[in-house]
Image (cartoon, rainbow, N blue to C red; front, top):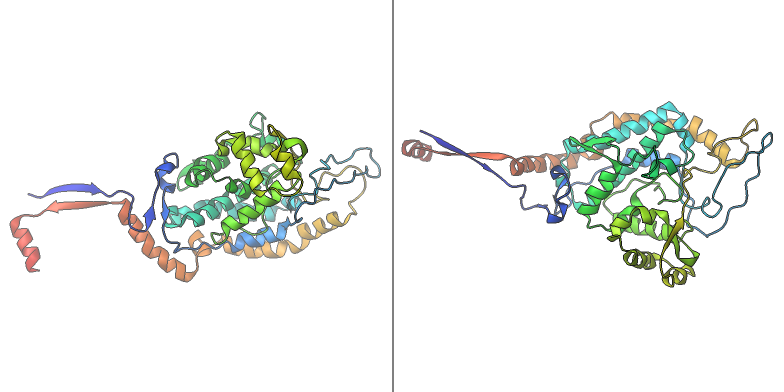
Length: 384
């Protein structure tokens, strides 16, 4: 009589690595490939970002001039003159166009479903990092689009406010319901040992946070891009100012520095330059005072009061982007996102590699039945 037993193989084979520090990470996301054999493509995300992101360049720490009220009203757009000129901006008025919103939702859904075809542990650590950052940012944009028009992110980013959504389970990845904070604090924080550079890749929607990139993240050069983003933010009025003032963004993410202001201060000084270095260095304690909750919109992409129409150059550019040129690439995007995530994100040669890795991955995570054969059966098998 045959005696069968089942041996469950641990999730481990020569090309996969996992660490004890990932204990809080959902099991399906633990581990990574030692060698980067798969490179994901984000051409659709690139097209979207290049269309709607405006790069403002590095801060010169200038204060913006006051905005006069428009003809027919005494009301003015409220801005923070210390920070309004800083950080990359997004053409949020594009969300008035249903096609743009639909395309954004499709791309975010495509990112969510990608691990159904490509198990994330088959990707390198840097490739996974790029994936999570892109998913986070496009989910953030998608959540803003659902609530648009939005003029301030204060009620959405502050935990004590009624419209706070960062803890809401707004996506499902590989069958796991996730919130934006789950990605930031439960996945990225643990998988990358609380490396604070990652924070600068997470767009918050407001001027006072890290700027949105004009290109999707990729594994190649990802840490260089994050360092550049960190340096830009820290050397702006959004990040640091006189008398030890720093962004409230750091206060909200102090857990990434073990809730230690000394560690945070050392991190800031690592990337800070100019006269502000002495200001932060000599401060006995940091003052979380710098904030700007205003939506990171292109100037002219704001609430209108009075007047029959916007005539400034930024507003004119908005009208072209929303009603004209932006509609051309969105047709291309619709074609891309209609494909399966695997065929969209991988080249044909990469798909062949994926098939091989996926097979080995299934064996590593699966089970193998071992059967004891009788002497006659064993002899018969040997003869064959």
